[in-house]
Image (cartoon, rainbow, N blue to C red; front, side, top):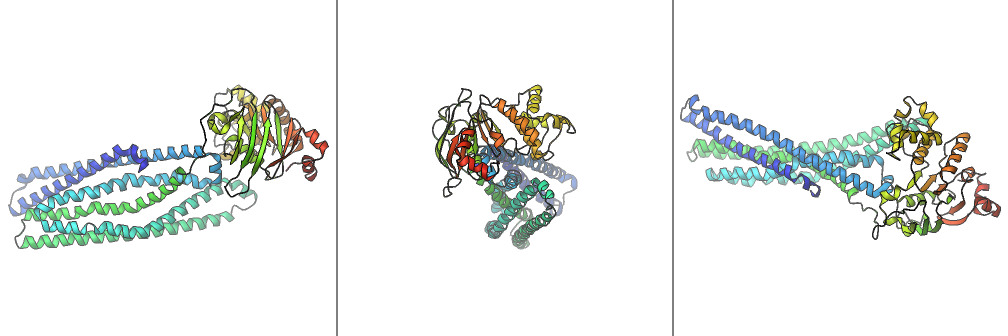
Length: 570
């Protein structure tokens, strides 16, 4: 409801149109009762009641028009709410950053942003307007019934609360089933998307058919829970119909007896009888939408689990990004834990990079190398300590402005569904075609791109599914070369490449990184021959640093790593 403020106007119009239709229904029942009274009791001919009949036809047409307009405004309200929710979700996910998204299943986040937001439509387009009409229309009918037949008015007034009472009673049971249904939907969506994204790997290892059974089990569970919800929905519909029918019958019996003994005129008796089922109709319609509203409420719970997740805080006033190119980078007593009780991934790490200095970060697996990069990129916030760029803490900089100063090549680059041109222009949308071609040639990517079916216009698929690992790596490197960034982060940029291509790219990197502050994660000795300094991490601590040739002669941790892995750094 907090997110529905932008949809207040169309919702109010929807309720107003519905209420107007209810008033027209009362008028229509009155005119119909008057026609029957004149024709059957007063013996009037067709011509004498023609005006009333034309009026009834006009009321029917007008009510149809109001119903149509009500649907339009109701779905406009729902569309605005869905748009606002999706916008809020998208912006909050950006604020939460890649760290949060990486910790969640992609399919679960996607299901929340698509299916769960769609489910909210039923609440705003149908349930919420019907909730207002269920209160307004019966009160309007009572206002006409009580002066004509107080006894029928009392019956309507006493029996009306029974319907919402049973709705809530059955709803408590249905709520558990609905929550389970949405959990199964999230699980199924998340699992199915994960399987699709990993289908290539599953095919390589001959496990794709085994996952057919897994998906069948997941969908069977979802089907069973959905049928359980439907059974409860049908039960509640039966209960509401039974209550409405019995209540209408009570009114009809009372009206019939009073009419028989002459205590009630025919016109008034028939008018009350026509209004009795219409009195319960808004409540029955509310019961029909009740389960959809419960589903929407459960979907909203998943949405607000994301929206209410606190974004990383940036303490203190904002500071401007450094203007000098290149700039110094300083790590001051840096400590990071993924969770408060977890052991530190990085502990009391201090490191200074001079402007334009090129530093390689090496160490065994789990030493904290990738986490260090994510902290510099602003994906995570340090538990303790700070990172300074030209003496300014990056935690207090605008994240987008800070990241525009960084060229980053991850070990597993992400390529989006689109053409080669589109993936390359992400790095620099204003880059010319000539600049893109030069970057691809320097990254040794131009030749294989030209051999693709449509060259640079080839669709490469989600995550570069149509490319090999080496081709994807070269595209990511070309994307980085397009950025005129003073800070370069390279996470084994020549992984998945053959020896000859790797040598050519190493020459390109050696020339490109001159005059840029550079950090490179190294897993091969030959990839760090051009760096100025090597930093060795172990268990999140800095254990050794210095020029590579000096560290080799020294015979410390760096030399031990090379000896243990035969010249290959893990």
